[in-house]
Length: 339
Image (cartoon, rainbow, N blue to C red):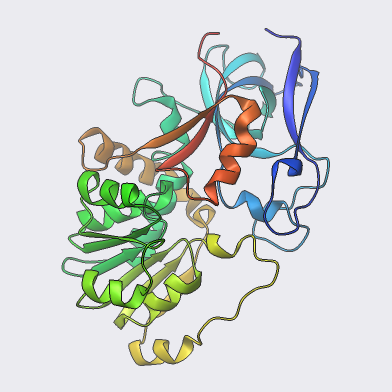
């Protein structure tokens, strides 16, 4: 085991869009696990859009990082040493740990991962937080039924790609917004979406929806916000249901833009708009993971991962989320099992 441990800190609070200077890579001694803790060597590190809010000092649903604090993320790793944490060396676990080669965590903050069921990376994607977010947001809030039209933004991402497939399993017509022709082909050809819209090459979102969703929109899973959501709202049917999961188009905004006033349309459509956090459903995580695992194993849900190699490149992987560079779940590969 190396004697030094690389770790990323928040170097400064970004003013608008973060850049490489937002991150500081430091080296220190590999930490030792305290009583009830385990030392975990990172295999894969997750980067997610919500982390942008943690870089600001203002209010957010996730606690802000302080300047100089270690960055944190979903990690799947291998236990190197356990000091009464309830795990053994060689066990694969997942938890919210530091952006680092090695990190310590209390036993209750770690969950076991069975590497024989699926690639361990899926515990950060389709069988982890993004998959569960898609499951509950689609099944509990947007709730599309057979014959409904379901629209999802960020459709080629970790959450949106699973949400659309779950809606398809419910018998809905599924329309996804994504940021390239390659992503649209992924939605239509690999995931079975009925239509994909390349928002970067589409000048008129309403006209695109008229073609892709001629019967209006019954259920909407919003990951993006902004002008696309304005257009979707104009197409809502009576009793439409909207799950607001993310607003990535606004995360780097220095001033919150004012879009078209939407409330009159909600009166007309009697639509229900509800924001949610996946943590709200924590008591039912096991149920969702079991269902998702069954769908993945029998081929009813497909997934893709975009993997960046090397801890040192984690900032680039994170920044690429806001440029739409990833298809499916964006991960950073840090190590191999058994090294």
